[in-house]
Structures are given as C-alpha cells and as structure tokens.
Image (tube, rainbow, N blue to C red; front, side, top):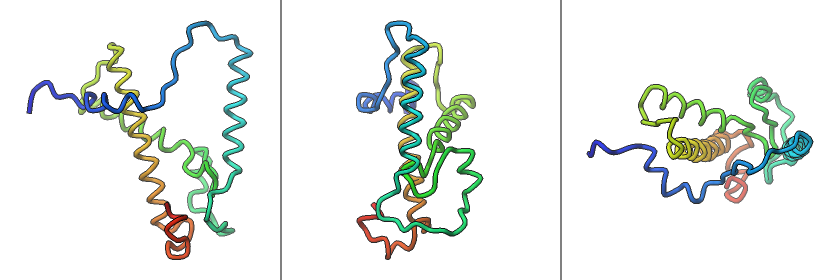
Amino acid sequence: MSGNFRFLNLIKPVMCILPEVEAPDRKIPFKEKILWTSISLFVFLVCCQIPLYGIATSKSADPFYWMRVILASNRGTLMELGISPIITSGMVMQLLAGSRIIDVDQTLKEDRALFGGAQKLFGMLITMGEAVAYVMSGMYGDLRELGAGCSL
C-alpha cells in the first residue's frame, strides 16, 4: 500500500450525500436560538410518543430502563434508540483519532469536515446495526409473529 493512504479519504465520495448544517452568515439573536431550540425539543417529544409500526406493545419490564434514562430513548417509539448511535460514533471516532489509528489533523478545515462526515456515516451505520440487533434479539416479539414487513 501507498504511504499516502488515509482513512478519511474514503469518506470524500460519500460527503456529498451526507446531511450538513451550514454555519450562519450572521449573528443569530438569542430569541431566535430559543425558538429553534424549542421547536427541536417539541419534535423530539412528539417522536417520543409516536409508536413504531407493527410491534405489539408489551407491559413487561424493560431490560434497558436505566440505559433509556441516560440515552434519552423511549421504548417502542420512534426514539427507541435515543442518542446512543450519535454518542457511540462520536466516542469511537475520538478514540480512533486520539490513539492515532486514523490520521486526522484538526487544524485543517478539510480534515475537520471529513472527520465530521465520518462520524455521521458511522452513526448511521450504528443506527442500522442497533435496529437489526433489536429486531433479531426479539425485543419487539417473535420474528415469525412480526412478519417480514414489520421486521424491515
């Protein structure tokens, strides 16, 4: 392999499809920040109440109760996974960068953007992995009872 290979260069082709929030070009007033924060909180709270399609609600004890409190998740809703994929991807990427397993120079704007993109992509992969693990482990009931449509 070439000595110029960098893990972050693998992210470049995917960067164009990853969602990104641009920095504002003006100073945002405090009231506007409060407004958008309130809207975000409202959307989060609404998502915490919308049940997942196709699963039977269970009154049994939740094995992840204390984890849900910490990771802002809610059993059987759109917020089932909470913030765990975001937190996990951020921690793993920081550990990889801190231990020099991946080469990233935080002083370079391009490297910071690629590193952020890698965190987003890794977060999406973790989300898919956790969702598959929840379904396959029987968290929502027996796979035969759920059916293929609800399992997907």
